[in-house]
Length: 494
Image (cartoon, rainbow, N blue to C red; front, side, top):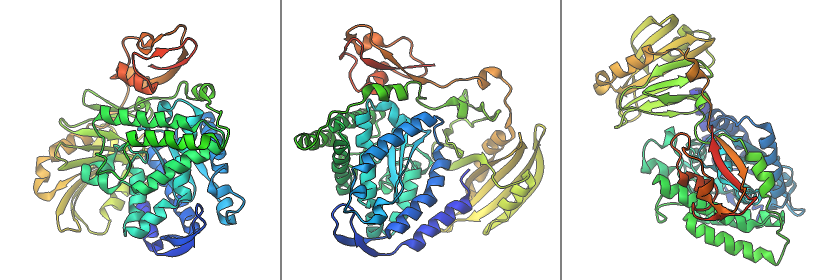
């Protein structure tokens, strides 16, 4: 779990740093105003990076991580931050490229040189050239100092920077799904991080940097078509007039135009399909059940060997840092996580009950089966004067301390306390080997043994809820499109 105190310190740190400095733009060389100095941007990235890792988790594939870093460094070497006439503070800034363990198709950048792509994005990319355009786009956000510009124009820009990244907002235009987006369209719009001009500039820079690295940057256009198809399929696309991101369809056309402008200036002959496919063959697609999954209203965690019931009518969102459960009206919320920095359930309960503004209503020592547990009920007044009642339960199991925190408006608490209690008391050891040995769905790259439509290569049935159309989107084509003999085909299998 992300420590609340740590996140609060980070927020205060960012607010305290907010101000105005005048420095040269790495891209134009002209002086302009920014919210932070370049040194402060680097510090922001370093402070926020552990939060991002805690929220998403790193994908456990060192070879794939090294591969993404190599492509990222090639693109970075052609950026404005590495050119001979660029100031030393830009040229000497170290960049970090990370692969996050998330199925969401997502890429984003933090100030100071921290670039992230998810395994979900990598599964939907089809070549080194496409990846180079995506990474170049994110390097462009850093080089353009877009976060610092946005923070200058909006008082809370520095908060949106971190919150937006944690919420999984898709910088390439696809809305994320995460606990911070529970507020619906208002929250989604609030956390859109960059303006259209920023996105267009990063598109231009992504094409420029990848082209100068000799990649066929036109290939990036097909990825934006994939984003559009994913948005359309999920029904989550933001109308173009509302989104700060240009429409993916518009960007597909623009990427092709930009690439054409570079064709007569540099050699763009690197596509890199085979080496890319070799790297993503076997990558986990979709949610990884080994990190927790729900089946028949029970949440199972095979790696940590526990389970607990999910209340009827509650939606569950599983993250590396916590599990969130909430009812349809979002009037009752439960959070489950590791209680870090606590040596016992009693110590965790003491820390929780002792927070400023918490009024202890009831406290008791209980047990969940054979596991010692501490229960605390507190009342908390929010900043707008609303009273919240909170039921917290801390349980010792497997050498860890686990916390359940359920809360609702004080006036509505009794309507939900039964659901809270049943879930918390239902926490137990997972012993079912079938549940423990569950395996994720993985990407399987095959070579077509004949020329035939894509549909001819898709096995039946597909695992889980995957459809033939999902396979078509993964391959950036249609089910009826012919696949040439010997061409790679992405499939999925257990």
